[in-house]
Amino acid sequence: MSKLRTLMLAVLVLCLAVGCGQPGDHGGQTKPTAAPTSPVVLELVGPTGTKTLTMDELKALPVEEGWSGYKNSVGRITLPERYKGVSMEYLCSLVGGLTPERAVEMVGADGYFMTLSYKEAMEGKLVTYDPGTGKEIQFNEPLKTIIAFEREGQPLPAASDGALRFAAISARNNQLIDGHWTVKWLAKLVLKEATRDWTLHLEGQIVEEMSKSTFESGATPCCHRRIWTDEQGGIWAGIPLWHLIGRIDDDITHQAGGFNDGIAKLGYTVELVAADGYSVTFDSSRVRYNNNLIVVNTLDEKPLEDKYFPLRLVGSDVQKKDAIAQITSIILHLPKGVPLPTAVIPAPGAPMPTLPPSSSAPTLVIRGNVEKELTFSMAELKAMAIDLETEHPIEGMGKYSGARIHELLQKAGAKPGIKFAVLVSGDGARTSMPFGLLDGCADCLAGFSYDGRLLSVMPTMDCYFWIKDLVAIELD
Image 1 (cartoon, rainbow, N blue to C red):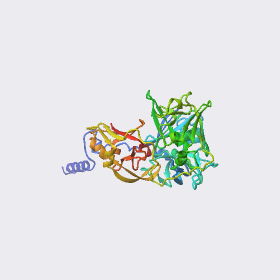
Image 2 (image 1 turned 180 degrees about the vertical axis):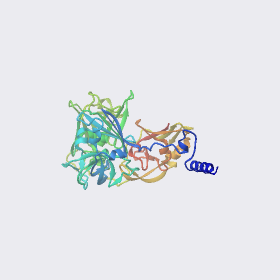
Image 3 (image 1 turned 90 degrees about the horizontal axis):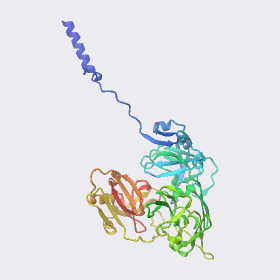
Image 4 (image 1 turned 135 degrees about the vertical axis):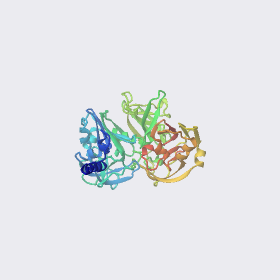
């Protein structure tokens, strides 16, 4: 009996040690779980299908390393730093490869995108600048395009760059590229059919043969993009004529003070010339800061059809006699025999010159899934205004004044379950963002712009969300 008791006691101790459960419950132990999977950081789409990569998978691919810097649209220089990543050529090869008949679209998680041609992506044929002077240079060394995941030996800062960003690297720290190319929060590469190439001849105090890719970079939401909606609902997008003039009216081509207002006040004419030689002419007084004369390159996000290709003039200020398409040249006829004023480069944060006033007093509407739709007048917004010094992602530090958007949303009474907020500009452009990101931003403002309109001031956020001519916020 003592032996039996000893055996039963041993069995009991064993059960307590390892657990005795019901059949099929693995002896009372926790069921094994699948190892957590790493998140996807990059999606590749091409003719052979779709491929996704985690960060570990991306880092396991052949790696390139070199120097890259950039110059943004207001002339601010970010000096070259060492980047590490995977070449665009290799990544494209995983989904069919980049050929001269294809282009690659780089898409950021925030919706910002840029498209590289075969030569730009595979041969590094990008406009380059001297890091010391910011002047455009002819760069004769190899330039390789990569999707970078490290800078100076460290992961990219998630808040400002995301996990991945585009870079064009060289062996030495002696070049900058245009900041428009440096897509941040990069999430997807899409191979697509290349569109026809073209150039725009610009002639004034200086001459420029503007490439299609340079025009496209200037027509992005983070740069000079303006849209116009026709009576049929077609959305035309491009660059206001006055911004293009600013590239050739003096030697300051693309930064704060790029448009020489002194020369415009002195007076000149602007001639737009079509492929067949037909032309139209505008006085500088009409063109000056006029966002309703737009040189467009797309209709509903597609290249223009042959009767308009490559560029057309549209906008609410375009009259029947002004209509012109197939634009190939823009020529600035400057006054002769008189000294021309030099450009005035504003200090960081200084207001721009006064633009033509809005046709109506600006208001801001909060609508959608709210307890009550509200329309705030400029006077009401100014009564709630605070002053804020913050950094614009392209233009740098600046001083802003406006009403906190969070307080405006509270007054309208946002209903439960809202997922998205849509920022609407006066030209009809709509930018969607997570509602929580906007509602949780303590210092996001409905700010007062230099042209008497409103703009969204979005600290720490990408320029994609800094909306000019803000007229409504819709909650969905």
